[in-house]
Each structure stands twice: as C-alpha cells, then as structure tokens.
Image 1 (cartoon, rainbow, N blue to C red):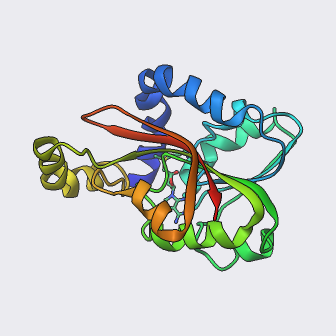
Image 2 (cartoon, protein in one colour):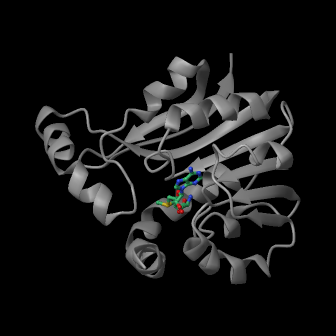
Length: 200
Ligand SMILES: C[S@@+](CC[C@H](N)C(=O)[O-])C[C@H]1O[C@@H](n2cnc3c(N)ncnc32)[C@H](O)[C@@H]1O
C-alpha cells in the first residue's frame, strides 16, 4: 500500500524539482547511443531524454513505480523495462559482462539498499570504454546541514521509500575504481553530484 502511494505522488512531488534537474538529465542523456542500462528507472523520468537510437534496458524493482512508467514506454520502442532490482542475480540474464556502453544512475544510489554492491555490478557490466552517467544527491559537506541530514535521515528514509540523505555516493565511485571525466557539484542543503565516470 505504502509503495503504491509513493509511486502515485512521485511525479507530482518531483514536478517542481524537475524544472531544475530536467535540463541536467537532457545534458547527460540526450547524446548517448549504444547499449544503456537505466538503473531504478522509477516512473520513467529519463525516458523522454534518451536518444531514439539508444538501446535502453530499464530496470525497476517497484511494481507500483513501474506501473507509471509503462504507459510512457509506448512512445519509446527503443526502451525495454524489467521489474527487477540492480543487485538481483537475474539482471545478469539481461546484461552480460563488459557489454554496456553506458549506465545511467539518476537519483537512485540514495535508495538502493547496497549501493556499493550496485557500483561493483556497474563495473562488471560496462565495456572497458563504457561510461557511468550520474546525477545523484549526496550528503552535504556543511557540518550543520550534514548533521541535520544525519539526524533526519531515518524519518526521511521512512517517508521517501528508502531514500537516504547521508550517502557519500561520489566517494563510493572513486573507491570502486571509477575516475571522474567530467563532474561538478551543486547545491548546499541538498548537494548534487553530476558527471561522467570512466573505468580506470
Ligand atoms: C527516487 S527514485 C528515482 C527514479 C528515477 N531514476 C529518476 O531519476 O527519477 C529511486 C528509484 O530507485 C528504485 N530502487 C530501489 N531499490 C532499487 C534497487 N535495488 N535496484 C534498482 N532500483 C532500485 C526505487 O524503486 C525508485 O524507483
């Protein structure tokens, strides 16, 4: 029931935020071609930005979120969607090792229960020349805001379907052996990392 409510309010809740991050999605995604994995595609927020020649596999474990994405798929025959989480073994049936040109990870590593394992999987699935495309919110660097995020996190996680405010996702990429080709940070209260990462 809770997941259904979350899925129902997700697009309306995000509509004002999308005014800011929609152009970023466009910058990151619209030129990508080749084989792409869109991780935790949710209600399909990225779909409109993918190039028609991109061959996209979208995965999403929440059936209610996927129910909102499915009607959008009718407009994008180049996108196939599967009801599956990134760390489920079944993803390996869809995605071979060293096979992807891009992985798109937008607003999702805050929520995935084991983000480091997901990033290890990203490494396995990307071609050596493949790129990880990232738009994620991360923990604020400010002591006060970071502290508030830490305290508020359990409540937020309960309200926002497992989303965490206090992850150092940018560090996880570097620890896993990715290098930032282009990246920039923005925001203070909610700090964002946007970028393109390559394998070392
Ligand atoms: C905040 S939404 C972001 C949706 C979309 N990527 C976007 O940019 O708007 C986070 C999504 O991550 C999904 N998620 C949670 N656990 C996951 C997992 N293990 N693997 C893949 N996606 C997951 C959630 O179901 C939810 O749809």
